[in-house]
Image 1 (cartoon, protein in one colour):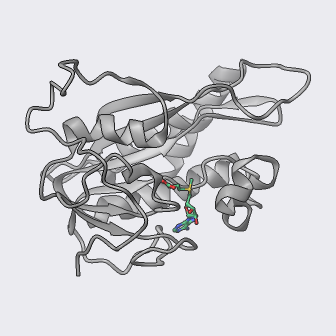
Image 2 (image 1 turned 120 degrees about the horizontal axis):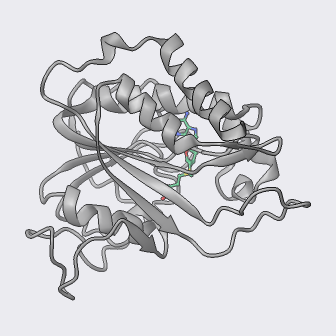
Length: 250
Ligand SMILES: C[S@@+](CC[C@H](N)C(=O)[O-])C[C@H]1O[C@@H](n2cnc3c(N)ncnc32)[C@H](O)[C@@H]1O
């Protein structure tokens, strides 16, 4: 059953446009968005969300993503293990038929060791990721992207939110690693949006790397052809991820 869920999300304005290259102000859609997650999703929606689309938000949380979307124009189905939502599936294994949605959205806890970061309390991240290191986070993503891919229709889109992170003083390039996951699954990377969200809250001393004040939204497209996933093995993706890591720390 597809419903709008009746969740506390406002529908102040529509971010969907018939002509995706123009807005009310006449400007185009840019890769870099300054503002909130709602602004980020609104920017992506101007190109990738169509009236009548069936959308699954697998990690609905507080529903911030949908604040600038006119929910009367799409069929939004919400899921979250914890937060109030239509469903409470683990996004890695959802009891949803194959190829159901035009768009699947995944915004999991994206930093390892949720107990050290501010978002812990906001989203109870420590419950799900408190024991995970960075590799565990990427494995969680991999399972989530795979499941999103399954429930998304051919020619549909998978929107993935992520952020690079530092673990034990070393850079971990989540964006590249998740791109590899998409590649492994035969997904085509259509776009990457960057959200600039002001000053970071975390203050590590001494400072070894630039503090992150941006995150990403990757737009993958699912091909209608048989995908190339079979030619990638788990070993290959981990090796590729390790190679990225080696180069970063060389
Ligand atoms: C970063 S928050 C999502 C925020 C959301 N996009 C919003 O607009 O408020 C991550 C969410 O993922 C949920 N979550 C964590 N692990 C999950 C899992 N395995 N399956 C489903 N939901 C999960 C958490 O309960 C949390 O609400």
